[in-house]
Amino acid sequence: METPQTIPVHLGPRSYTVSVGAALLETLGRTVAQVPHVRQAVIVADSAVARLYGERARASLAAAGIDARLLEFPPGESSKTAATWLSLQDGLLAGARPIDRRTVVVGLGGGVTTDLAGFAAATCLRGLAWVACPTTLLAAVDASVGGKTGVDHPAGKNLIGAFHQPSAVVIDVDTFASLPAGQLANGLAECVKHAVIREAGLLDFIDAGAGAIAACDRGLLTELVARNVAIKAAVVAADEIEAGERAHLNFGHTIGHAVETYLGYETIGHGEAVSLGMVAANHVAARRGILPAAIAARVEAVLAKLTLPVRRAGLAANVIWEIMQHDKKAREGKVRMVLARGFGKVEIVDDVKEKEVRDAVKYLGR
Ligand code: GLY
Image 1 (tube, protein in one colour):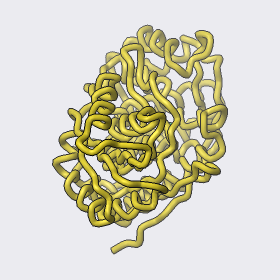
Image 2 (cartoon, protein in one colour):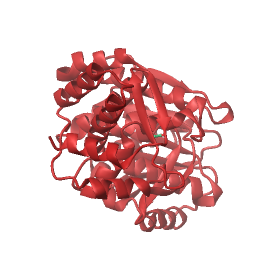
Image 3 (cartoon, helix red, strand yellow):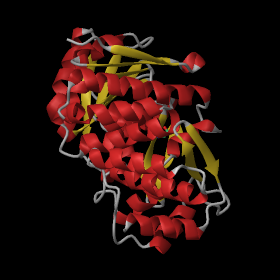
Image 4 (tube, protein in one colour):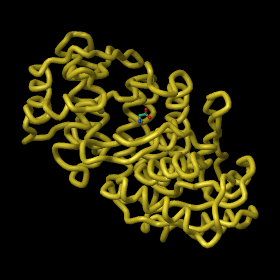
């Protein structure tokens, strides 16, 4: 059995540890038991994840002396709404055993679940502690670390939410093996993002390990997640509330989010949209002459090797541009984008022109 890895997230009084490894679901109870004053837990999971792992999570908590009940909601991005959030509040407040501030919420599942569970915890009784237990690669390397919690609004994704750091994050890489085909690649898009914004060596690791990662090799997945969490933890520790460098994590997300909104969240995976967004952003940067074409080509080749999309025909550039102007990253109508100059060298620009986006969308449709 490979040794689990632990990555600290340094945030002063809100610091916590991320544990990554195989068979870690069995240790969830011990981790939750370390949350100060914990008396009971409520596990929040969608019904599909609840069926797969709910009982094991509950048993692990029970073995650590923590009484836990399960609160379920229907799976899918369409559940990431204020209505589901309210139903979770109802479930938290109306359980047979009354909750109080010593109740810990456990978010067990993908990014929709950890965002919802974290937001339910942030808002119930003005703030309960929570522990993230991501079961997808995407949630493990992105959503569950950093304290962004929330739900979607008809006006856009993640528009209602709060920063609420978890007390711990437990990542059992064995859970990734139950992901539907394509879900691992979705998470790998965020890993490529981390490589571009911070560390070329990570791209080499992903490229060399692509086959073993796809086969869910436990050692390689543990290493992959630990390296990505370390990058995200460093960015978040430097800029918890996105006043500056945390925005680098939005690389690939400006055009990516617009593509996701344009096509519909149930039609394209988040990672697939981010893959297209990174290719488009690199096209903009290469056209500006700030990114060597060879780096853009290398990133694209690795994304394609990971079975992520690097082309997409039929996107209406004018609609993509329109959506980008309403993105919450836009300021006073100016579109903000993160552009790469090279590996580990990124800048935030707010002078993106419609023509550049049109050219990039045309490039995606080639
Ligand atoms: N997913 C981007 C961030 O956590 O800032």
